[in-house]
Length: 225
View 1 (cartoon, one colour):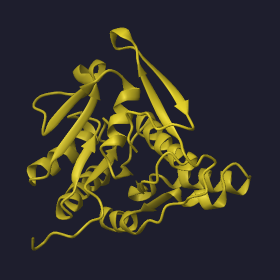
View 2 (view 1 turned 90 degrees about the vertical axis):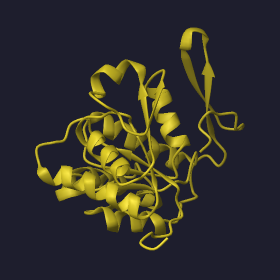
View 3 (view 1 turned 180 degrees about the vertical axis):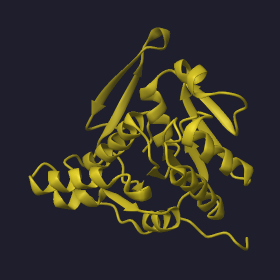
């Protein structure tokens, strides 16, 4: 279709804050990212909330005709959902299942500015890539240098021998959505992880309790990464 850019991806997972932050540039970046996803015919997978940057990016994708899948723990629905939701909202048991489902349904990951929750989700998918659990691209939308200090920390960890130099390139970053998505399209996976065949096993317990175990030899998993 004219106006559409052919992409290697189908669905993009976006991590972002349930707050909008203090700068207008963060809100503008969320809308710009939504527009870029729709221009490339990409579906959005996100944390399911209707507030903050989560609400902005999901509403912008939906309003422009894109498909939206929100995944949210039941315990957070009253806190992170206000008013009408957009697209499909899929309730899950807890934060572990939320991250697993977001990862399973996505071809790459993008982090907008956010707080502890955004960082936790971001660092987990980076760690999965480091371990060889997946080879999906991970991108930072570094709006107004928001992630500069995180990138400096990662460079320090490389310099001091805690992260392999090749694994520094698990993450790509850019100051705007168009440039970032293009970098993700061009990303070549790093295949020197410490584990060559790995998976997370999610063992369902009675009464919706879950035990998460790591299995390095089999691929029985809910996270088909």
